[in-house]
Amino acid sequence: MAENEDLELDDLSNPPAEEAEGGAAEGAEDTSENNDSSSMQMEDDSDIARTAADLEAVFDIPVHVSAVLGKSRMQVSQLLKLGRGAVVELDRKVGEAIDIYVNNRLVARGEVVVVEDRLGVTMTEIIKSDRR
Image (cartoon, rainbow, N blue to C red; front, side, top):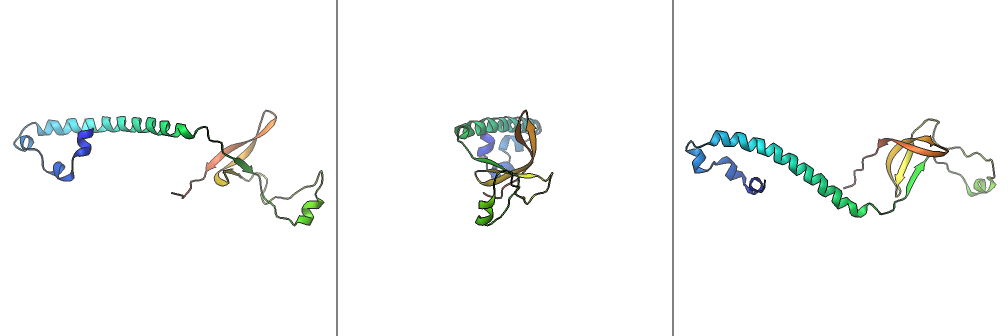
């Protein structure tokens, strides 16, 4: 694994003297291809384990999650007139996906569901961020 990473492009295009003189070059190539695929799988597994271990430090950080059913704009005078039983019209239609925010950043869309006697949200679409 480490040997292949240290090779430069010139080393790959110019075989060593033993292989150039008719040594076991063909067998070595087949073996290296097989080893490359198995070592790639081992590298992928170790990368996943390392990534999970790296993320462990952030697992306990609290975040603010909001599920927004809709929005409405009104003047302060209208807001002050609202009382018990008042209906506020939102900018969404019935059955339309709701927005899910994490720390005020849109991360997903979903649907409202009932879980036992509480409301919940099922994520139906993950929003990919262009932030780098």
